[in-house]
Amino acid sequence: MLAPDAGEQGDYDDWIELHNATDQGVDLTGRNLSDAPNNPRKWEFPAGTKIAPEGNLIVRADENGSDTPGLHASFRLFKTGEELFLIDTDADLNAVLDHIVIGQQTTDRSFGRTPADMDVWAVIDPTPGYENR
Image (cartoon, rainbow, N blue to C red; front, top):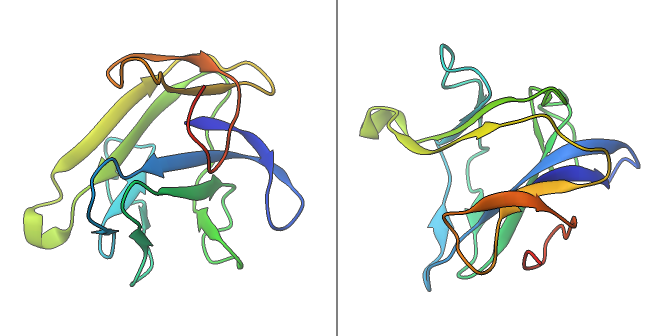
């Protein structure tokens, strides 16, 4: 899910929310997020980054890659649209784990998977850290 939301620093930056739909934790160490197909390793998750079973993880898309607290990607998302990639580790040949083409965005709205069908993406209400509605 992507949407503006006041982050830990009080900025209203876009954010990327990952959901672990399994009953086991997921370790994202060595995996990457990118908005550039020619640079799949643009921002690497810090060592020890995990998503709890059935949990959510928010990454701010604010170009503040090393800012704390929270996770901050080293890129921003364009309102006019672009692509977003979740990339596997070097050991797993940087395979694309998930990919989405994001169209033009609407202010203060999210773009996420719908609760009724996780294969369908739509403009929805922002719900950072909670189930999409």
